[in-house]
Length: 144
Image (spheres, rainbow, N blue to C red):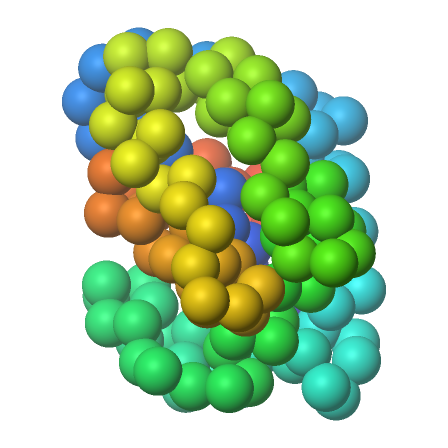
């Protein structure tokens, strides 16, 4: 797995800096990796390397390619429907299982924006702001 995909995967599987964090299961890591690879294999939703490197440092550019890639990931992981609506019960269940101490703060991330791409961008940027970036995800991908 190349370093670019490792970086993007880590961002999308952010974990808590403080508080209780329940690690992803092997099945969850495999599923998330697969969904990310599907989005990255499509030129219309591939997040460029330079953008992913910025994300790792908390810099989220206003970029159409980033918006498209995040929307792809959000739809493929059932955080959003095909028509761009947030699947709030699913997000609360999944994030609550992994970040029980942070779920109230994460609820602020679950906001429908002016369009689906902006909604996905806000959701995942906000999640990173609340719980951080996952070193566990980097370890998982480096082992493949």
